[in-house]
Image 1 (cartoon, rainbow, N blue to C red):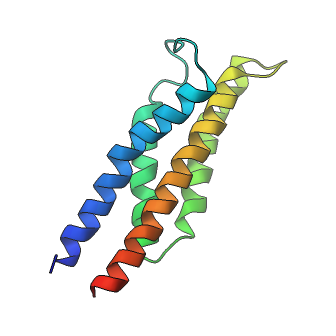
Image 2 (cartoon, helix red, strand yellow; image 1 turned 90 degrees about the vertical axis):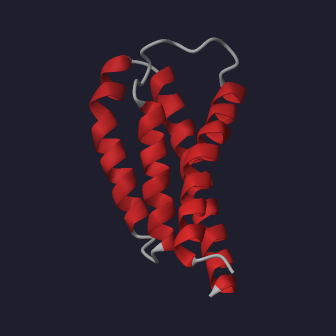
Image 3 (cartoon, rainbow, N blue to C red; image 1 turned 30 degrees about the horizontal axis):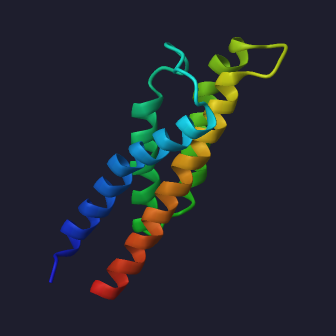
Length: 122
């Protein structure tokens, strides 16, 4: 039998690191062209941390924290997104929304899978 702490750590690592590949794949499917350097810098690290927070919150039985993560991310990125293209559609804003939805969907699915697995384990 796998200790619960090991199972939780495995789910968190799965969410964070495999999620990076999943979100990258989704963004490449949407934007087949070359990446724009400097566009939403730090997004990879922010995505990894948000998946950790979301999956951890679901595993801890506190899914309401997902709203807090979303609010913090939105408020933190809003000025950068607004300045990019104030008058027209922003590629940065589209990338932000698509990446966020892909990341949150992956983290939520991993969290629910982890809860399901842990309730079967204990």
